[in-house]
Length: 158
Image (cartoon, rainbow, N blue to C red; front, side, top):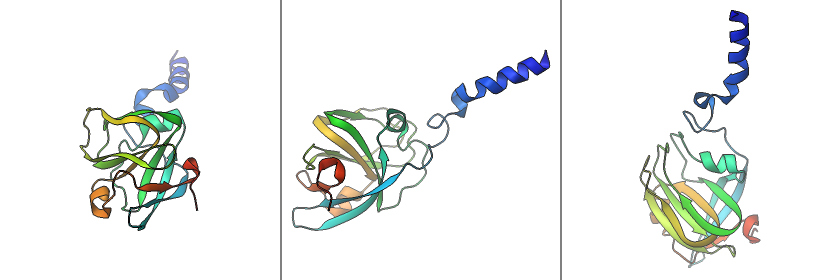
């Protein structure tokens, strides 16, 4: 009987909520790509971004991460323009969220999202992607609506 219980526990372990990334631990680092934001004055800001393209990666995002470097980010590619809504559940660090239209233009910026907040943060219109950066990056780099994002997702990579 004990052997059957141990076998059953072993089979069910992968389905346990406590054993899943995003429930109590971060997901492994996702594949990275280069991305640049070009401001109105032509200044180029380079980033290495993790690519969150699969729904399960997008659901977890930056949950339980304890740090993000100034040149890092996470790009959520929605595949096609749509309203993007984000929240900070289980996210331990402040983030700036840059909502990017299909043509690569910055549509909206939400600065310093509050860690662990359940408040909805909306793109305020259809966007192709959402870029999460270290909190305070938009202010530090003087990013603005209308700035241009260069990346293959927008057909604007260099």
